[in-house]
Image (cartoon, rainbow, N blue to C red; front, side, top):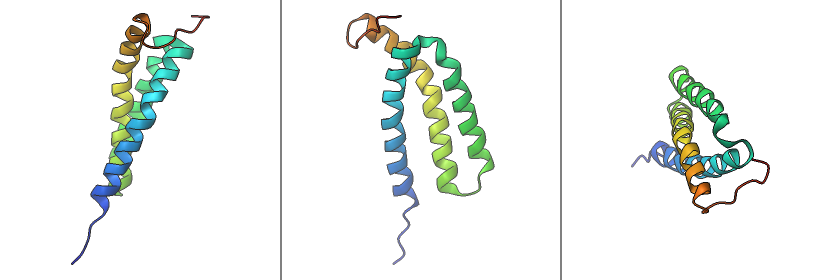
Length: 95
């Protein structure tokens, strides 16, 4: 019996990427506010473009997942601002 591990590797990678992007959004909003949304856009587009150009299915998938996670992060950045306004997260004094 042959075992294929690609799906599990991609699943673990997805879990880690989402887990890493969540604190990135929180810290980005804390230090820069929502004005850094364009960085998320550039990183998202770069990840998607890389996914098209890479032949290896695992790396290509992880690039695509990372790209779309950063695009989703744009929405979450603005949502994070609302969560800060509600007092669910700390507000930076200098903002």
